[in-house]
Image (cartoon, rainbow, N blue to C red; front, side):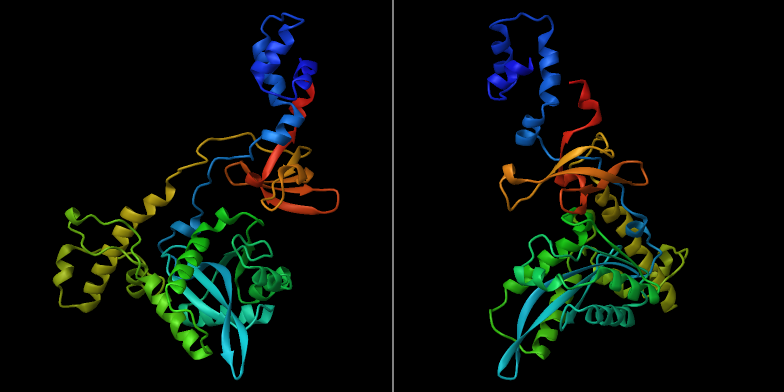
Length: 368
């Protein structure tokens, strides 16, 4: 069977089957040929798809409505942007801070991408929005869709120094695996929206003061975006927006029992509690449930294991030039499924998400 498969140039099952029939008639050859084709290393290199795994549940940080706004955030960097400085120009960068729960955003301007500049930006966010407990980011030299100038500037950023400085302020800073933009999609989506609004404005070089004003204006526009689809027939004319959640909830609050009569109460704090409860009730009922829809990755697949040989996908190179690597360590999620691994190539070691890997050879393939 393998000889016939190689003679037909690693074609499919039918071509291999009829080439085999020229000399032999093997009973039950069809299932055996399929099994052989699935374990063929050459065919996997040329045709196999990247690994898939069941989509993970939302982390607790995304669903805890009792956590203060901007206490658990995602960070990303965009830019560079040229601004006037005397007779010349300087580069500025934007630091996008997205609240994991309310989906509100806060944008800061960075003079550079040095470690101290980023820490200062985070301190400004914490001073104006409240203490930050957890930060998730994927800042690296391989940001999806990032400009070459931004990638070049991010090469000097030391992640260890950032984590060490953040730990002094009680911040737990974690980084997503490289090339895994879907790990922080709620951050990437806001960068896309910001760029769309930015590009709709007239192209001109701004000074620092005007740039700060424009950033605040865009921030206000993005915080007024609807989070849910509201039908006019449902009676809810006004949609839920991040601004509603940010303005009606200034810090950690315990749930308060309210009734419809509180809407007309003379006590203003009861009125405020009533309207806040209405917003958070709609937030949980209309928005939070929509985040758990699995439009893809809805099945459990085989976990990669130590010793598996894989192919590293690279969008900037033809498939025949992709590097091969061996899995040296797997990282299991709380549900026992593997979604990122550590691989070793001929020259280096990387952490990669499984959807960027193609399985070439596994221990179970030794029978063929």
